[in-house]
Image (cartoon, rainbow, N blue to C red; front, top):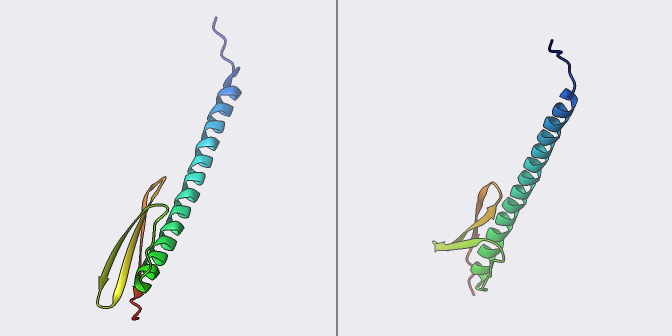
Length: 98
């Protein structure tokens, strides 16, 4: 006769709970890193637009910057790689006249 009992079920449940906890923690860390990349894109776009507007060369440490100038305004678009895709931001700054 076969006997059914719950031996080992606690181990399986604990393993599943621990795996779920590790996955949620990983997603939280990824989300925080993505937000940090977004803030870096905001900062990079602003500093690149200001630098170009006053005529100073700007070097991006992280990511890429595209600069357009039209109608006395400088538009800088920064793209910074992140864990959950690429974060992008644009900044507009008026051109300084010497």
